[in-house]
Length: 543
Image 1 (cartoon, rainbow, N blue to C red):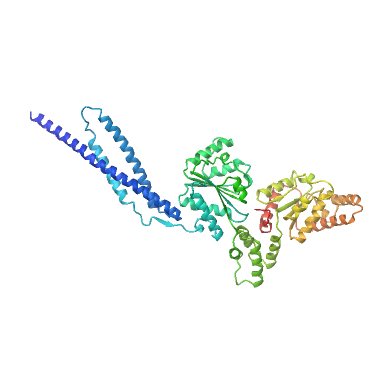
Image 2: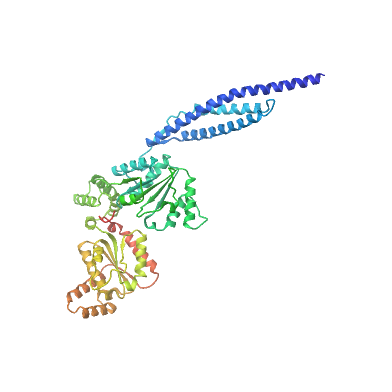
């Protein structure tokens, strides 16, 4: 009998405890719901402050980001548990007698949640909340100076990138104005400010018609490998990867013609992915349907002067003659940042004569950097064709006639203009070069520009002896005799041709007899790269 009474008492105590835990959870749950609403309010306030900090170009501190991440996760957990409890309560309603099982577990679960909510709500105030971002120099791994023009352009770029109405943004300016470096720095700054989760960079330039090469650059930035090889399949893979990254900025540098972004795999269907491109003209920005077209203006005269002194290692203590010439040179650089840096660096410790020669070179605007003179039948599809390709791949603007300009005895105005508009003429003196009256007229014009415009001239003795060219022997002698018989009434022409051959053969050139042609071509390209300052373009033809 006593055992029965004891068992009944234990059951009553157990039921009483369960009942208590069913009453108290309701109070705890109510506090959790109120705390959750307060946490949501605090989270939204923190997000608003983050937007304000970004607009002030300030970086949100790490402890703020950590708190926000914890708050987001916890709010999600609470909402999931609320759904689970509602489902459980609906199941209880199906029983005639209310179920009290699980009350104690529910009580301690909500008790733990309430404690965490109180802790998060108590720590939603941060001091400092954010810190000012340093200037653009902070985001550059190389020496970078922010001038008025770059600061103005960068401010406009940041504003455009934050504007949800802009999906494609264009920065345009002349070659050498510093567009590439500026967009690289702005991209890093935008990522630091959390405007974007990911920034991808790809150079277009000569790859405009090679979708795969551009896709490869984008894939490298995303640590992406392709399982399928068609351009369309690769584009789908890139698009899917970009969309999984959240907010993404794709920078396309040096766009020179219309690009189909979808063919590359760049999704422009919302605000999650934006494109920032650089071009040499505003027309190209318009062609790419840019919502914002931002110019990068040249440096002021004083900014150009300060930058030239910095890179050429001259100062106010230098000789007055050198300072006068340097001032002229700074003005000739037309305020183009890249040009000033290259020119200044190349003239360190150089005599004043080199400064003057470069001024003269800059004053004669060049449409082309390099003009190739050659006998088409000899080398167009072999040596000269390979040399042209190698020079172009290194970024040199090179003129090589397409075979449709030759005809008749007179050199065309197109070739005359191309020679005059070049900085360097490379003359491929092959076995049959002198047989062409066309080639010899080119040669006379090249020598003239060498003397009057301070142009560079490099003779390449391709499987011929320099002495044969200089003194017109063997195939060159035979060719000149044939010309004398043909132009018997124009001895002055023959004399000009002979003199041009004599002078060019006396210049410092390069000779090729045998061996690997590609190695010899690379030697020529390296020599051109070493003369980059003399070959730099400053032309009204070039944007």
